[in-house]
Length: 361
Image (cartoon, rainbow, N blue to C red; front, side, top):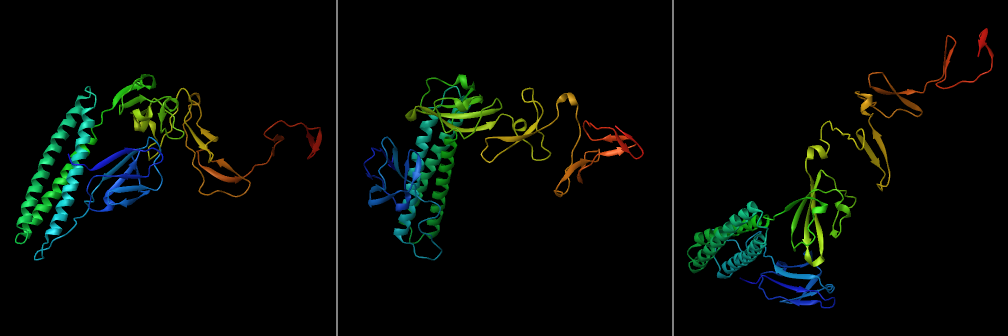
């Protein structure tokens, strides 16, 4: 298998690291530190990388080639001269991309082979993907043979050379698709809840927790989103990282999106036995406290609609209803005297007063 990458472990002091693979352009040479891409480096020489800052101790350094295949190195047109240098550059580009694809496929197949035997459907898919990848590799080899033949007859067979380039590009695309299929064959072991998380996991074990209640307090676990709270309706996916001796957060999703989230049109906020009627909480900008708008209890048998006014009213106005749920802004009411009845909305203590020829107690 062709070498397309070199790996090292940082020690906190070394800045220069050499690599042993060929490349077409310096931009095709990529680096990750603990799987995170970095551009903080220069070329000390053609085969040596110089980091701006020495990678820390125990950081996994990966120097690898990722050949640009978005466009061909050289393009030929009918009637134009075909240079062997241009053809060799195109075929080198295809050859390098095929090597990288082959290495990715080999790595993906190795990862798929380590999946748990109980996941029979996933293993079957991985086997099918491997077969597809092998077929793609064969097609890539055929494309290289066709391309080599095209070099021999390049001066008189420009059409044949163009066809060979097309075949090689198709082979790379097929191999990339096969590699993606293998990468997707990750097997998740379904477990019930936090208590069922394996106590002695293996590296790259993948689990799916159906009831994620309390997962935010589980240890060791890294990468939990801020303010996330597990619930019986949320499934959480984790991966075990042996180098960090910790589970690593991957993602989460609702077991039933219709129950977990509001619909876009005419949303309904449901209540339950624990929290009571449906409610909406409007938090402050720091999410440390908020105001709750809550519906009446079940015992009220309430069933009505309140429609807000078309504008924000004027100062000192209040909301009033027309008795059918339509709200409007109006001026505040005042105490009324109606045939001897003085309604103040509360208790009234008076002394006997003369009012309009009578007594007002």
